[in-house]
Length: 228
Image 1 (cartoon, helix red, strand yellow):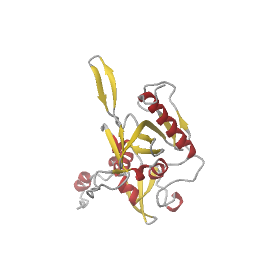
Image 2: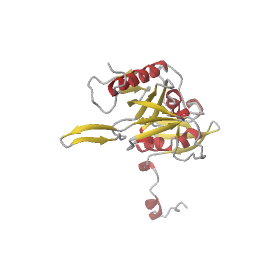
Image 3: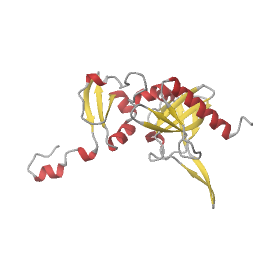
Image 4: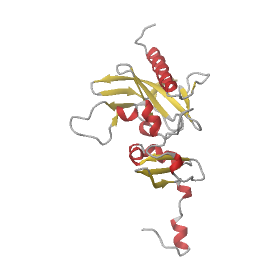
């Protein structure tokens, strides 16, 4: 087999990512049929994460990955991207670094290419950049506040036992991780989860789905004071 083919690289990336997840005690499932939108499923103890695997290539201080795909239609090849209703995360394997990364779909939805920086930009830019160190597979699982099968709960800077129960499915996350992955947690809240943000180990704010929020218009009509 030609080791430079896309199929070979894809198979290697998938195997490396699966092995890295298994080393973290994450059960890994694989669809029985091929050509789906995701390659693997991570069982995070209460939630299944649909993962599309990609090959990343190091170019200087950047790991570059084509996250878009293509398919053959009657009119020729059509380029496509991934959306949140298709996959939950994009996993990347970089052979030069022998490292696996995991990005929530909220960060890469609709994009054809993603760049993970290994070092700060020379011009000092930080906005809009993704740093590889922030998305290593082990750290990304912790940032998502999910449970590793057979291990303790990973909840940012505060354990679940130190916060009051919310009475519904919830995530607990430290303020720093919440800022870094705001889009992901906003998506989780929209799906019905409560996001409890902690600061210095103490409950700080809670993000709820919009349908659970106070209807300001109704409150105003009933004579209740409107919020500023």
